[in-house]
Length: 178
Image 1 (cartoon, rainbow, N blue to C red):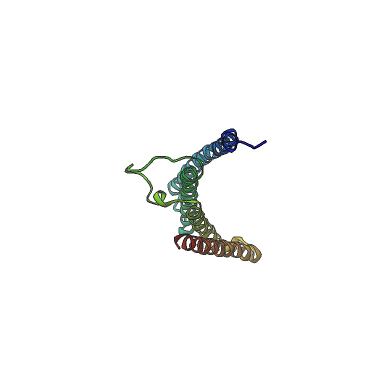
Image 2 (image 1 turned 90 degrees about the vertical axis):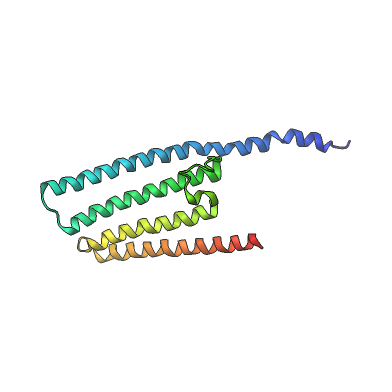
């Protein structure tokens, strides 16, 4: 008895539709990242109040000010990373945000895909790692040599990983354009 292919395809259509809809399972993850970003906003204000209280109580050293300011920059960079993951990830993996022609649409969002997002995340992680490493070096006397070495090696690993991701993305994009 021959199988009616058109009838079989109709029976399978709900399965691909259901599988495609499972992308919405990621929505709570992105909402959780929005909550995490709110925590970083709170952390920023706590650090800023700490800096102001230092200035009110006494004149802190340049190193103390620099360490607190680097902490503020670190919080901002992590928050920027969260924005990239939330907005870029939602747009790439969940659903379109329909921001075309919106005056505040991020420039990078118009050409974001999974590969571009990976490169942007890798470079953001390098920036965050650089801030941590700079804070460590400013306060180097508080750390032992082994800690300094490991933090440097970890940072270099991030750099090499980002270069590898960017190179791989370049090769992939080049192969797609041919």
